[in-house]
Picture 1: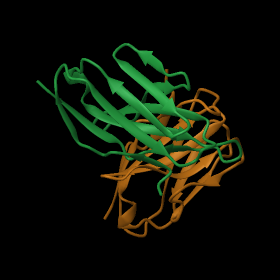
Picture 2: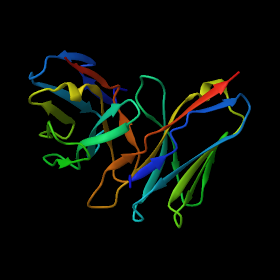
Picture 3: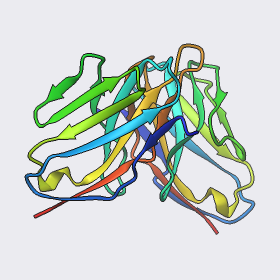
Picture 4: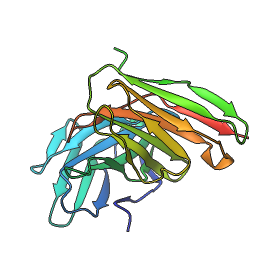
Length: 111
Length: 111
């Protein structure tokens, strides 16, 4: 089983739609969780961190479910500029500190 | 605002040649990482370092060596390049349990 798994998509949705991504992780002791965004041929950039209580940043909402070991990202009122690949990232535990990436979910917003 | 800088940006190698990729960060981060990204594979961790003078193997370390002689630099070496090492290489740096910041990537082709 991969440490971090995502549905690779692709997701094609119309502008203005709501889209949700899920990601599962295998290490129950993982402590930090992130969503990154990667545009074509560019480096990944942090979209938002994911906290146990859930967090929101404008049209983006991230949630963490430790019991089921998954994190989610919700994008409301999607824009053309949201087209990108979204990467789920999980941080390892102390003593085995490393960042593990999911394979990414490709999103295309259609006009 | 340099952040994480990778050198070179592009390189073409012949099979069997060697090269070193340089990653430099000016944020005084403890942790540094080398990833490779291939189509459909997401980012896979090659090696990482949790501090000056330390290195550790990631998911796909074979064929690569690394060194972290100075805190701000993390070098990735290919001793004898193979076509299977054609990829985009990303370096990143960060602090424990926080997000990582990425360089712009090195596009390597081995012919």
